[in-house]
Length: 218
Ligand SMILES: [Fe+2]
Image (cartoon, rainbow, N blue to C red; front, side, top):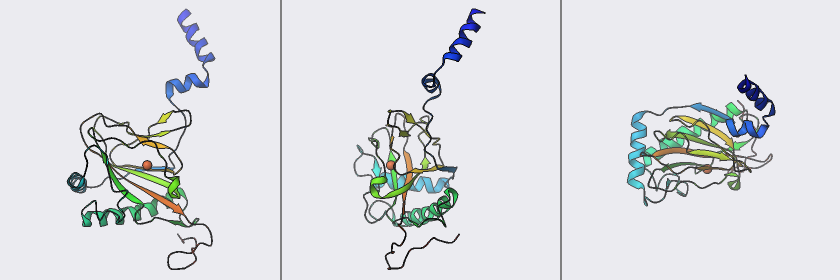
């Protein structure tokens, strides 16, 4: 009886902070998510290609700084496939969040990149993508770490972390200003993701061929 009374009392006195301590921070960053699986053959080829081209095992692998898209970092055929797949996927994503046909947006050819980290490498420090002029960013988990469901995280100004669902195949997009990072891998295996940015054009802006950019009809 005393136990029930104290339980009831403690529930009544529970503050928002207490609830957050139990359930975690209640902030949301995901604009859209889905699970899209690549074939096992593709994932295996990509992983082998990354390991062949990984220059320094101390640091996570990234094609982000490859100015030639994937040309200097991955097999040419694989790079072309990835670019083509995610250019199409980005268009579908923009339809899903309501941007397609409403705002002018663009995906620069080098706004899609591949990354890999594992127990031996470092991980991606806390950062955002807004500095590059992006408005929407996305991550596709090609291969999740086994037994480590928490790698990618968002972080708020209170230092609270939020780990979205990130199993193999999960793809999600978020506002580019959202601070995020990747926890160091604690288990064996290679964690592989493809990530990208979408930029919005200001009204009246011209494209590279000097054509005025207009909303794209759906
Ligand atoms: Fe990032």
